[in-house]
Length: 361
Image (cartoon, helix red, strand yellow):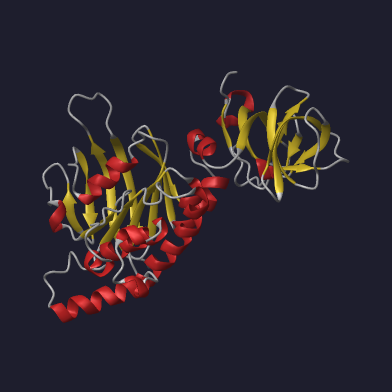
């Protein structure tokens, strides 16, 4: 059984003069050695939550425990410098006048010179920069500077590492690759880490557990697969991945199965997962349809018109309009290059039926 190393329970952070809490009743746990990610739009509270864990913001309610120790609550506030937490910032915060070795060893002055030198060599080897000890930050690429910042944060052996949008200054193509590299480094170090980003690809690449935040509230804390296929709220369903909501009606048959009627036809469903019609007035609801739930099939009886197409290399992302007026999205192999306005056959192939109350309009 995994040891829960970070435990955030019903945490609230409230700034004076504001009516809405910056963090509102957030709860999640992170096991030792796990990497957690907080994701959400700008202003959702994810960085405030990270700062509260760091000790840079005080809790107005709830608590934060590190390795069983209460470090934040309305009654307790352990100072940031006493929490043994490492931080990696957006701008790396490297000292331009120091070489890589001295940047990494900056927080190790409590060690004897030989021990300090050995620890610097260890973490630089871990991040793949053993050859760069004598270089200065301006001689490094953005990705290398990021790894130096990571090595510096890991050098004092923090019990928790916090990373606040560390790839935001890098090219888009580099971000996902570096996220995979950083994950490998953190796993090799056995580090427990909490990471903030607004980029889903980064979150999926680096996180064991991902939390989606909206207006101060942690909407769901789960792995990437569950967030995508079984979103807990309508906001999570909209924020993660490509998808739309289609009108549906649930009907329970004599055999006990629930049929999901949609403009695309009746959806296959697992009766254990699908809610009963009584969950919604007259069984009327909205069903989430991901782009990978919609299959291009020329032989299908249901036709849809191509409204938009986005080329993604190996595939197109088509936005399609049904005769009912509803829209769906579909991933289609790129050799199926249809023209805008063209009608194509589609069918639904849904493994997970996810429904929400009907939203008018």
